[in-house]
Image 1 (tube, rainbow, N blue to C red):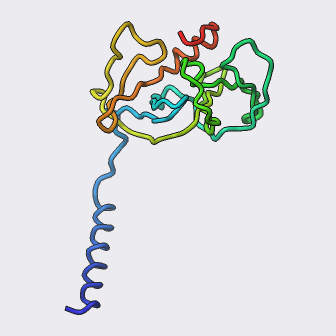
Image 2 (cartoon, rainbow, N blue to C red):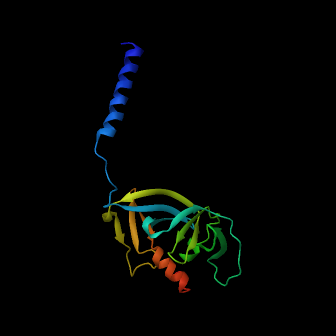
Image 3 (tube, rainbow, N blue to C red):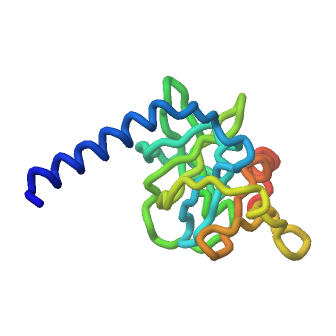
Length: 172
């Protein structure tokens, strides 16, 4: 068998697979899966429900502002608005890992805030059965554990974090 015959066979197989992909009926979005953003804040591996957030963007220049609240990093500009920027790690009561926040998660509907964190580790879709209530009396902003890759990862409740910001209750 010559290399040309093998190449023709490979090309034919690739062409058939390509054509078959377009011949199959379109599949809609899987509504039975929960989209999560796996991230790292304060050195901890966490997850956030994507649908609780209002967006994600690379860290912006943060201008420090005076505040009595240690979780306030300052303000930044986004689409013509000034957003308060909070450290997600500090809001969760996590130790300062010494890493510079490289990402901001937008939260809130009318009053937007930016929650700064260190790293994105991935976007995953999990079945609802992969989410379990956290043990104990609820852990404030971390009421669920997601089973990701054989390990549990706390899931941050953005509504809970926003309530703490607006009600001035750090750490909950």
